[in-house]
Length: 119
Image (cartoon, rainbow, N blue to C red; front, side):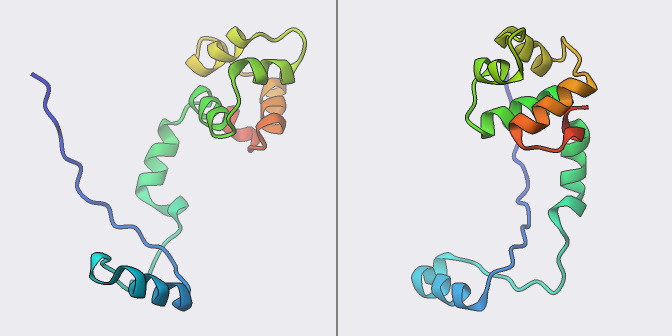
């Protein structure tokens, strides 16, 4: 029998200019719970981000960047070069095809992403 597991709430810190904060309080009143934090860290320094980043394979990164840019596998393949096919992109995303340094450079250029994400 499947079991639904509840995830505990996550605290998120967002820096908001005072003028915008005043607008939010005026517009939403008691429906918004605002907490002023004394210290904050960059999301890149958070344990959550480090855990997710460690689990992100080059293929997963390729798929995430491609989908975020609204590109199909066929569009990526056509931008890579004449010999590439959408099955090549699918295989890279699934980890069935490795991503060479040269391919990582092409993907980085096409997707406007750091080359390290695909290595």
